[in-house]
Amino acid sequence: MKINRRGFLAASSSTLVLAKSQLASAKSFQASEPPAEPSVPFSVQGQEVTVYTTADKSNQRLSATGKVAFKHLGQPLETQICVFVDPARTFQTIQGIGGALTDASAETFAKLPKAKQQEILNAYFDVNNGIGYTLARTNIHSCDFSSGSYTYVTEGDKELQSFSVNHDKQFRIPFIKQALAATGGKLSIFGSPWSPPAYMKDNNDMLHGGKLKPEFYQAWANYYTKFIKAYQAEGIPIWGITVQNEPMATQKWESCIFSAEDERDFLKNYLGPTMKRAGLSDKKIIAWDHNRDLVYQRASTILADPNAARYVWGIGFHWYEPWSGGEPMFDNIKLVHESFPEKNLIFTEGCSDSFNPQRLTDWKLGEQYGRSMINDFNGGAVGWTDWNILLDEKGGPNHVQNFCFAPVHADTKTGELTYTNSYFYIGHFSKFVRPGARRIASSPSRSQLLSTAFVNPDGKVSVVVMNQSEKEISYYLWLNGEAAQVNSLPHSIQTLVF
Figure 1 (tube, one colour):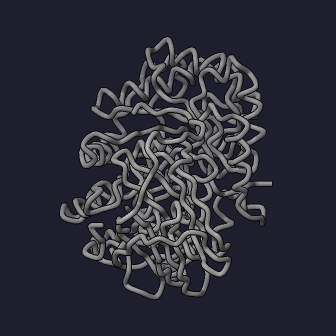
Figure 2 (cartoon, rainbow, N blue to C red):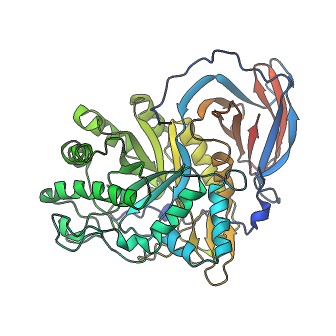
Figure 3 (cartoon, helix red, strand yellow):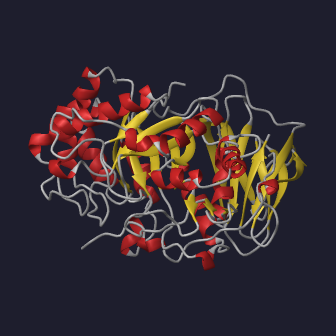
């Protein structure tokens, strides 16, 4: 059976056309740490909470919607809805939140007027006037979101003597450089391959799955190091790599199959040692990079082998497992975290497909992002990476017509930008949860509310609360007997900062 990794999302999409003026001004990375008690008890007496809101059937989009004060409440009644937050219980440290800087995003960006290009850069990478992305993914040569298939070498070059990233100098490298500059150089960028060159594969095709031929294992491992060094020579530091995008999916676009044992052996015998010999031991290697459904089997197979596990920084995952008709499998992420707490978990891709401009205002798209981000962070994820940050008016370009939604779409004919609901939902996290933040305990007392919470390096606490119900809900943000009363509109998401 051929897997369509995005088909299950065909009915879930939404955007909202909004001008940029609607936006509110609103370390070396470590594996997940065990819960710890702060040395000084956290007190909120006399403090105010600033509330930022995005809500359906309103004009609120990351809008500062008021301040509420903490007052003594003590033991709440069962009838008093609460979101309990405990800064004394800390968990994983956050690496960053962001999206993918693909060929498609770069080509769309290049077609825009300079003023709109600057708007995009501010909207995504400026923490004060935008949503402050600090994490980015990019493709190692072509993927489906490229205008065509290409590699960095000539066909048949086993020694990689022809290796060059000149193709990327037209659109992608200039785009990434501008994104990097917009963050002040504080952007963690990781690269992912969709397929080795055709001559390295047993189907002699970059598309339609196939497997890496054993005689090309070393050449393919060398390819990663050449990519990293070539990009770094262009002024783009690469923070890490994934081993293979979606290694269990045979797709009509660039794809390559690795079983868990294949990936384990490639890691321990070729990729890991090759990265080390090339002086790239500081680069993070992320295994799996596919859906939550098989994530435990993949993680347990690779990490059970200490010679493979030594090279693995973390396990990457996507959200497309409901392709089979089920629900998102958030518990699998939590299980991996509990089983292998010394390794990191990072969300590496998610989007909604079957682009249709008639569904631009469907609210479900943003809510899917909110639900996933809350559950993934609560399950132990240290980073969260959306797919394309920008696509055109058709949901592309894409050389196999696999058109999808992005948080922002650009009409390349008029230069107009459309900010989707997902942009604002993601912003409720990326704008207020900064690299180095620690997740803290958060627990709502009603299932209609989802929540997660963090304490930032500057000491400020950000609590994200999502109301997925049709009803307005009044609740208390409760800490150590002090509570601030907050009103939550139907189908809304709020970030509470204090």
